[in-house]
Length: 164
View 1 (spheres, rainbow, N blue to C red):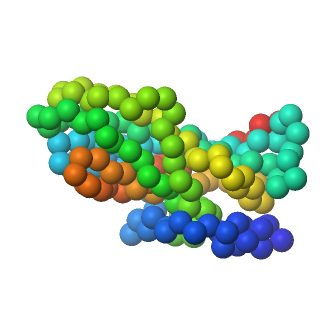
View 2 (view 1 turned 30 degrees about the horizontal axis):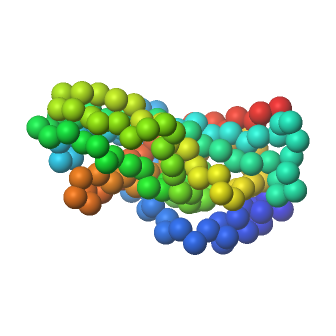
């Protein structure tokens, strides 16, 4: 029944999947160096059972911390994480693809500066999978900045936590 719930939730998603990596990630973040930026990400996942569970089921949330170092010569003011496909650890089996939104204001990242941007899944609709607490997941995040420069970040695996 859990697999059916997951499949139904995936089929609801109209978002294009961020493709899986050729090899599942290890314990350390993958660092991407591209067009004057050094970038890596970590994610945490949770399912909220408090204070009550809505009719759709317990909401699933993700929090992504993207570490950006500007190694270039121009200020970056438009770095964004567009969407994320979440995969089960050590597989290329997707759980869901979610749109992401920045928590806070868009920063100006000056040359030589390092900042951590925090993103979360868009809460316009509730995603409520049937998933066990402690299940290990990893994410593939589509990022964009500058004149349409895109990169895909891979997070290390992280366990799903429940809010009781």
